[in-house]
Length: 138
Image (cartoon, rainbow, N blue to C red):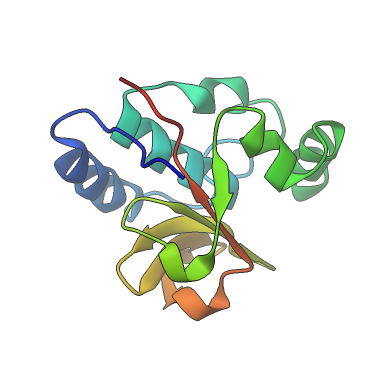
């Protein structure tokens, strides 16, 4: 499986985004678990995938309904070029599906950073149900 080619400066953009998002309150459709993960991908790749979702729902029910229409989390991301890979091959910047309150986050070493109802959380990579490699952008 090929590795994502990220534009120069992706690590700084990712770190800056995480610092910025740590100060924001949780808000469905604005700053929630899934949008945080997508924002992390956008920061690394210079894309604007989050525009497709931001502001389109105001509750967990609304957010999950959109994802269900797309076939669930995994299919929604795979249809945008993300590729599932074994958890043990997770690398910094990959997205991880955790499920539960945190739902999705970004891999940072052996931890996953995700946003929950009460701010950013850090959990072990062993909590991941699957990992998604970012799309290849050249």
